[in-house]
Length: 355
Length: 281
Image (cartoon, rainbow over all chains, first blue to last red; front, side, top):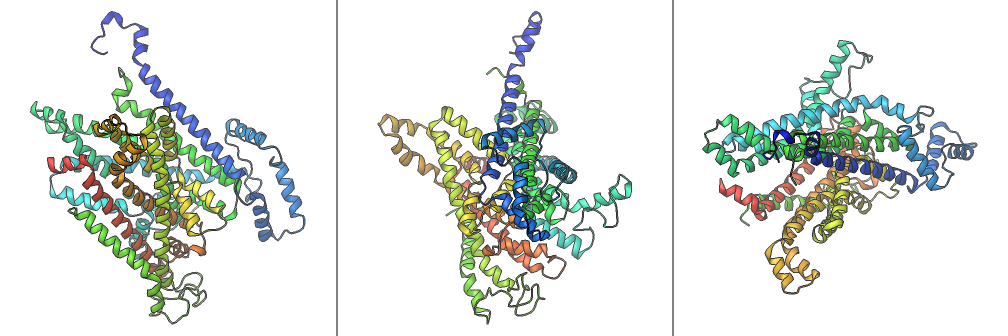
């Protein structure tokens, strides 16, 4: 299409025409996003309504064992059932649930445990930790992994590269919590280089002042380091094998025969083509990374969503759990949507394909 | 077997398996107690001694005995989940790849949805509603979440296999779909099916230990993850009980290493694309 363009044809219409594949791609992707989001919302609804063992009964038992409230527990449960609309027919409940999700937005009602506080507010308090640590680690791991993988692929014949690959494979198959434990034990307990088990110094109050920020950063080295180490190893292995297979392609032989400098070949020919699956992979890996981040939070005692989830699960705080379930799905789905929407920037074939 | 990765991985895994199966016998032989897992035989988190080389757990059991019994349970969870996940994944992948068309599109969107959504929160919610936390239930639950990757690989394989000339030939020979599936497609898929079993098993064992660390699980099923998580929660790392974390962690990591070696070996043996890159350089 590019070659056929003549200056007089560059009308608005033809320009619009060029973006049709792009528009179709973006539309498709957004449609799947909305559908998946709706499906996970519905799944969350179904899960909590059909869960074996009545959540309300469990909460009442919990309440009784915690507060010793025995008289009138049934009445209290009935009051809450009525208040939360659990006595209405199921389809009305579902529609109300969807309404609260869309127009609330994401209104999950009150937390059972921290009663009058809305679930949203509770999540909001824990969210910055998860978002900060998780996002930083995912991005750092991806950049580092892709760069190192490309280099290792480029020097695929050297002895150093093959040893590096063995080491990376070892790190990659080590479970994230095992690595966390080893690093904690070594760097924190044995050597005492880094602090552990706290998000920041115990004596400090959260504020936007430098000493506090510094403390947070120092305490974040171990958890972020663990996540980056494990996740980047996956990207290194992926990028390396992509590079190796791209380097064997005919157009690279052609580029070499043309006498292009190795740097140009690496940057413009090999790296660019190997990059695409890496970007696409990021969208898929986000969900699994969040799983890992939750576990890391527990091990390093960071007050993020994973910790909140574990607490809510232990206390059977169903509203909070539902909120967290939807919220995790929302974060990961939106993250992968953003990655997929950015794909055309890396892949000109999506932007203008003749197909 | 010419492939060293397959050989080393297989032999090591066999060793780990025998160790796990012999675990209870070893535990019985090295204690005077009638039941090696007797609760309150010691005070909880009693210091390390010759009798209890890695201390006691929070229920006052000999942690070494818990470890020796736990290996079997962890492998069992992985095995059940691996089989369940693979069966589901092969089914979905097979239908998608073989039938094609709209069915394929729908199944692919479904698979991608399951791939993207974070499974751990979902698993947490599901597992706290499980009232009987035993090996079969938990294996089944974890298996339900490990099929999407299997479905993806199998779909791609079935799709590519069913485009090959020998399948056309079989069609021309008037073989029906079932004959084509059993005679022409399944043999080509076998290495991938084994690959999925071990892949799904690794994923499930990882997830099970993850759930334990998040505080979900029960003493009924004292897996390696359980021992590790409880010890970590009690501050075992700083308190001289590091063995209770390191021993199960080491066993799990070694198991993953073996299964990965086996997978890599299988991949090299059966994936023609890898063979050309390995020899063509």
